[in-house]
Amino acid sequence: MTKREEIAKAARIYGERSFDNYAQTRSVAENIRDGLCAYLDPKGPCVFLVPPQGVFAAQNYRSAAYSVSGKGFLPLEPISFGLAVRISGEGDYMRLVLTCRKEGDCMYINIENNYNYELDLPATDKALEGLFETIYQHLLTWFEERVETYDNGNYGSNEIGFNIYRVEDD
View 1: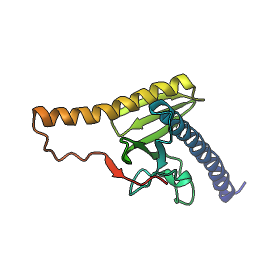
View 2 (view 1 turned 180 degrees about the horizontal axis):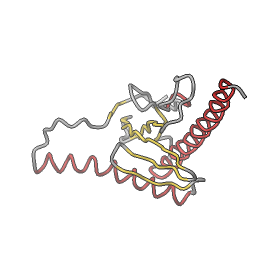
View 3 (view 1 turned 90 degrees about the vertical axis):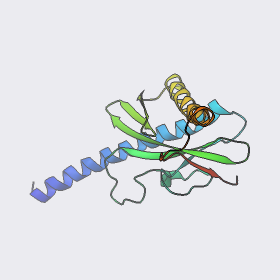
View 4 (view 1 turned 60 degrees about the vertical axis):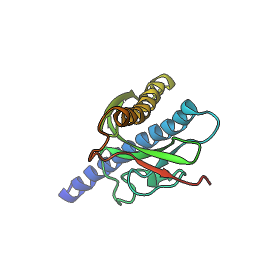
């Protein structure tokens, strides 16, 4: 085997692993989207997969929702995606950025650089419910803490918060 053939073999194995990483992450993300919406409000669509950065609409972006989208050769790295969660009846959505890192049969999910969640693969409904509760508590606490600070303290800061957008439903 030539040196170029060895590199090609290593690149092929890398490509297989990077595709597996993407497929596993995408499967988990779609399960989170569907399950979280049912967990929060079973009446209708309330969670969408959106890009982790930039302006977004209340729609699912399919492959464009992932940080590896448009990078050509699929990188083997942790993958981020956005969850647009409906937070009002007026069309306001808050984007949460989740970053997934697969190690063996476990997916490590980082939520907004604040919470880490460990999910055994394949993901079970019970394990996902724990993640949904973590996300729910994170969102609720985010609002409650800011109201508490406003009501009882100094609410001015240089903190960069969530991206909250009012969007029109399609």
